[in-house]
Length: 413
Ligand code: GLV
Ligand code: MN
Ligand code: MN
View 1: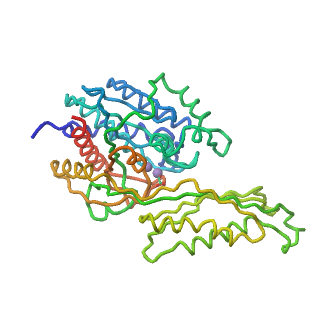
View 2: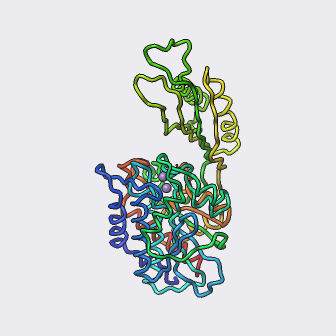
């Protein structure tokens, strides 16, 4: 058998890097709070650039803040193979969601170096800007702009709760980074492979260390603004009130009841709910809330999504309501050849695996619009994720990185 980079994947190095990254934005409860384009995110990016420079990988940043580390190929005109994930986390996030895929890609690049295996194509590690969408909504901004789903201008103009725009936050991040090359949009991509924790319980339950991801369920997100009128909690007659909170909670209850199915396939979540003026003795004049709606079948999801505005309108009572859809991502099926390559690489390493869909969203879904794409999952303890207790076994992290290294080598050699 030809030499493969998997034999040079270094568990101790992966562990050290995982710990170093987890320390940036570490929370007291063992998680990570490193939201997009925060000081912690910039620090993580700078560390990644430093690790890349130690191996002579060139670092580049595109105009939306996606970070690339490139191991050059012998034929620079050939489109590069891409692999990575994201460094940003949810506010009370874990140490694996995103970070693992970035570190697995770095480990694959280093293994190729250590094995002395040149490739025809360059291989680029990518850390996507704002996958999580918590500080700046919606998420997956970096991959959306790169794949043409969103414009750079509209993305740079998005502001966080404090009014800081993506553009401003990105300027601050750049100040924390050494000077980097510019990476133009439209740079062709040969293929994209992302490693990630499963974020579900299946692999652990069946005792299989590797998932070959078949696709990603669809996801639609919304922002809803409910407007009523402020009034005195003691003096304003109940009959005359326009209480935005009562209207908003009626909308949430109506949607929760309507978007239910026996098989629990439709996922409906209101994760953010903001009340104005949020004072105990004032009738709420305004409520803003988010909706995250998902289903594996795009037709079912679109039908549910199309009902959101009408359900909200029917429950608005004396208030006004405005519904804005932020994301309408259909379900994705990953490239058959990439999936076959993951199976073949795992087979050669004697790694058992399971084909399974992703119920969580990933940048790979958007990248699949511009390049053949696929994903590798490793088990996630009890499926706990978007949570400070998120955990995965080092042994599985190493297995995923080994399979990834061989897949990337196969695509680039
Ligand atoms: C990604 O974090 C998602 O919300 O699925
Ligand atoms: Mn993720
Ligand atoms: Mn996530």
